[in-house]
Image 1 (cartoon, helix red, strand yellow):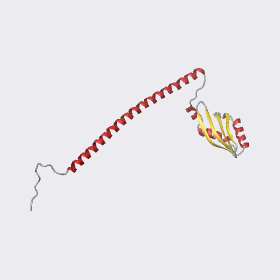
Image 2 (cartoon, rainbow, N blue to C red):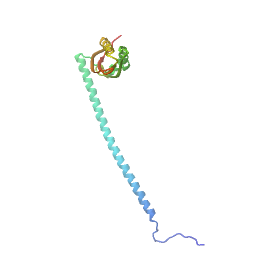
Image 3 (cartoon, rainbow, N blue to C red):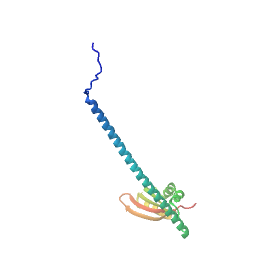
Image 4 (tube, rainbow, N blue to C red):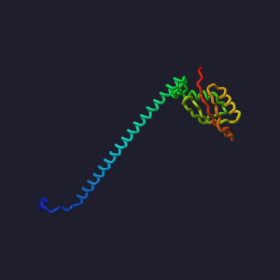
Length: 176
């Protein structure tokens, strides 16, 4: 039996495969570092853009607030009443407006679409379908007689089969 002694010679070892693996791993690590550095640089750039956009939005909001405040002061000086849309929403919430409209609808008339616009006043845009012209006329008569719905403006009509039309109105809350 021969004992195996370690090779202490000065000759280079064969086995360059291990060196190639080291180079490949070092290359992958370098690429990962460069990719993370680029991502960090990009994130910092996006952060500064977002900060600038936030500053601009705050400035615009402040300008809008000042404009609204000036409009309120001007309307007070001129004696006009200025009512913000938020107050109109609290005074006449959508369920109340819809309930008031539903009270006026004959059974042969359906509201297919309804849009409420809260601004200086509450305006309604609706698409209505009626079984026939007589049902539509009854609906229009009840709207005209109602103190809650004013400034009625009928839109285009379609008379094939059922009567289809659009209608614009302004809602006014009536005190009980």
